[in-house]
Length: 68
Image (cartoon, rainbow, N blue to C red; front, side, top):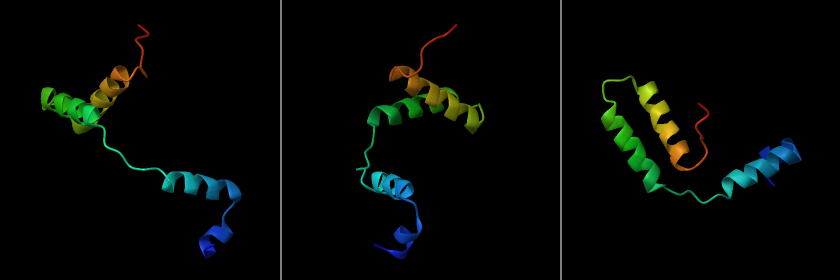
């Protein structure tokens, strides 16, 4: 083990391993959604466009339900 690993807790070490073992991936649907939202809302501030894009991604993935 490295010096760093010797100095951290088992929990942190397990979390670190979990993060480093993940294979990165790209979601083309997410990229498409962000592009469309950004195009439709060009006049709005970036922070608003990001929020709208995230909202749309969550809605399409079923993580956001309408509560109104």
